[in-house]
Every structure is written in structure tokens, then in C-alpha cells.
Image (cartoon, one colour):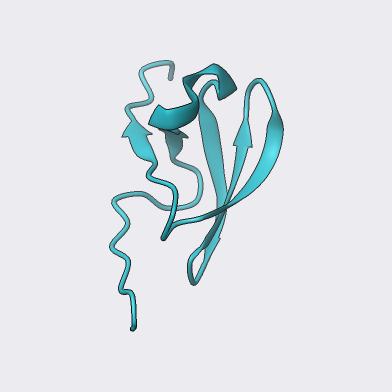
Length: 63
């Protein structure tokens, strides 16, 4: 079985993990195949499998 992922974000974008809201807002560092590296406010850098974890893009209103 082959999974094709469609991301609505790219490195530099801000995201949240809706299943782990206590992690805070994270900034996407890199996306390599199905591995997304995100630096979260409250827990630091996490490497997530995009086939298992859903991330929601956050609009950056603090410019």
C-alpha cells in the first residue's frame, strides 16, 4: 500500500497537533517524505510521521 500525503504547509509555517494541544504552537522545520520535524513551544523538536499524526496550520497573526 502506498500513501500519498498532501500538505497544506511548508517549512516556516506554524502548526498545532490537535491531539496534543498542550505542546503549544510549533514551527515546521522540515518535511522529508512522511517525516515532519516541528519545533513546539512547550516540548521542543519532534519528528512526526505524517501518516499517523495530523497537523493543523495556524495563521501567523503576530507579524
